[in-house]
Image (cartoon, rainbow, N blue to C red; front, top):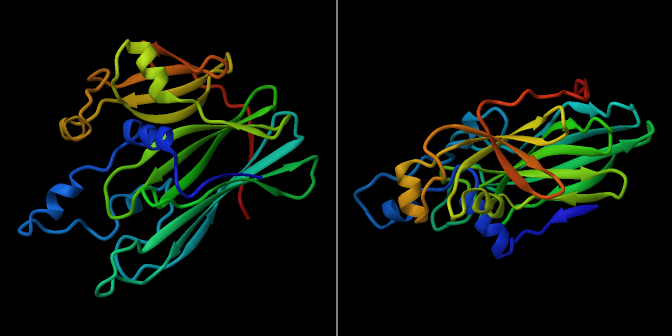
Length: 259
């Protein structure tokens, strides 16, 4: 089993700051007593791809299992399970910690055997919420593509990144999108990514949007471009190539609905 530790290192923290929708304006309102506090759980509960403890108190724990993706050769199956744990139903006097934390797990079965956990994303101090969304198997049935989302409860913003599982070696790859952007544009810049799937050549397809003016001001970094863009990401070189329009996706998996 592979798991991401509860406290990310500097590179991971930087990736989460520069890639994805980012937590904005929190320090500003905490220093201004006249400003109203942020809602209890924003904005994750409105996103159907994310699992939370609810929009507002009383919060409740829940676990959601995604559909099972079957590899093209039929030899491997996989599903993601996201658990949102309510630490308290509502905020009590003097408590400043999180009200909800998440654990995301990847389960894989080979040759119709039992499912075994292969990846675990634990909550961190900075990102106590997370999710795992399976997208597709590669055409050769070797790699499973997923999107890992991470956020901090009670702050806006979700950071999305690529997660690839290689069934041949049981290893994972998380491409450094920050470095790939810097190489593609020749400077430090940022975009908000979403992982879409594989194209016909087996490259990963990403959708990217510019940062808002508020995000650029808080991060101190500009958007790489001001319009929606599509990229292909080469797994081996971790190189981004901009596409003039959305590339055609190739769907390789068969879906078994969750029971």
